[in-house]
Structure formats: C-alpha cells, structure tokens
Image (tube, rainbow, N blue to C red; front, side, top):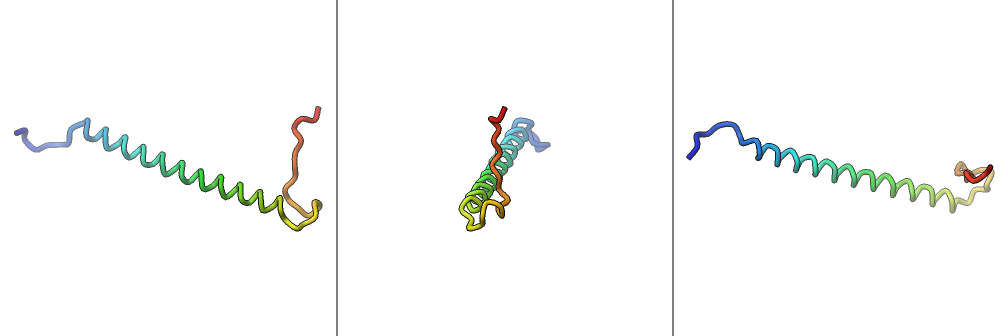
Amino acid sequence: MPPPGPPRDDVNEADAVEHLWSAAHEFLQAMRALVDAADEFVEQQRHSTRTPAETRLRRIDIDVN
C-alpha cells in the first residue's frame, strides 16, 4: 500500500475536467434562458396593440443597395 500523500495528478485532472464540463453546461443553460426571454420579448412587441409609430421594435432592411 502506498504511503498517504497528495492526490494523484490524473485524479485532479479528472476533477478539473468535470468541473469545467459542469460550468460549460450551466453557461449554456443560462444562454438558452436568455435567448428564450429575448424571443418572448420580441414576440410580445410584435403583437402589441400599439400603433407602428409607437412601437420600439423596427425592422431593418439589410438588402437595400
């Protein structure tokens, strides 16, 4: 049996990769929530009862030469 000592490097690397993977997953979940909220906001603006002059959402035509 080996004497007790600092953890092996492969165990630390596995923990670090697992931590990074979890953080990336949480980041993607947060970004998905942000995109969903923005999408819902845009849809609310599109279906608003305001007149076109009162809306803050404006279409931009990028195909104009």
